[in-house]
Image 1 (cartoon, rainbow, N blue to C red):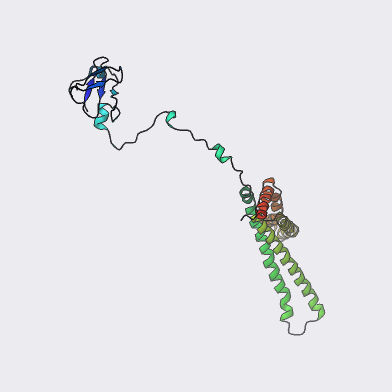
Image 2: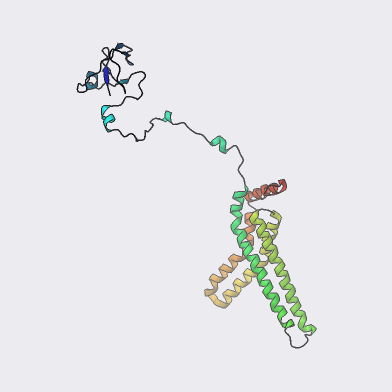
Length: 260
C-alpha cells in the first residue's frame, strides 16, 4: 500500500491505489495541498515513529489500518461494534401492552387438575352404579322359580339406588367437563356440590371402617380415602377463585359472540 507524507504536519497518508506522479493530493488533517511523492517501503515515517495516527486521503476506498493488521488480517473476520451508540435500543413495552391479556389460559391452568379428579370420581360412580345394578338384577333374571313380590321388592330398591348413583355420577362428569373447558360455571358448581354431598359422608364412613378393620395399618388407606372424598371441596375452592370466575366470564362472552 503506497504511503505519502504531508510536508506541513508530517502525517502519513495511505491509499489503496497509487497516485499518479505529479498529481497533487490534500491532507485531511491540515488541509495542505502537496505533490504526491510516495515514501520508500523501508523508510519509517517520522510521525509513525512518534506514534502519530495516519489519516486516509479523501476518496480512498478502504479505511486506514496499521501495517501489522494489514499483514496478519483475515478477510473473513467479524467486525465488532463498540459503544452503546451503535446499538439501537428496542422497546417493546408499548407493543406488549397494546392488547389485553386473555384470562382463559390462567383460569384453565387452575381448573385442569381438579376437574380431572372430579371426572375420575364421576366415572367411578357410573361404573360402580352399573355393577351394583347388575348385581341387583341378576337374581331376578336367573331365578329358577317365579320370583315373589317380597323377593323382588328389595332388588328393585337396589336397582333404583344404582340408577340414582349413575345419574349423580353423570352429573359429576358433566360438571368436570364444563369446568375443564370453562364453558359453564353453573354445571361446574353443581358437579362439585354433587361430589361433596356423595363422597364426604361416604369417605368418612369408609375411613372409620378401614381403621376398625385394619387398625393402625389401615391409617394410610383411611387418609387416602378421605383425601379422595374431598375432591368436591377442592373444586369448589378453585371455582371461587376470582381469576377462575373471570376466565369463565370471558369464555362465555366468546361463546356468545360466536368465536371458537
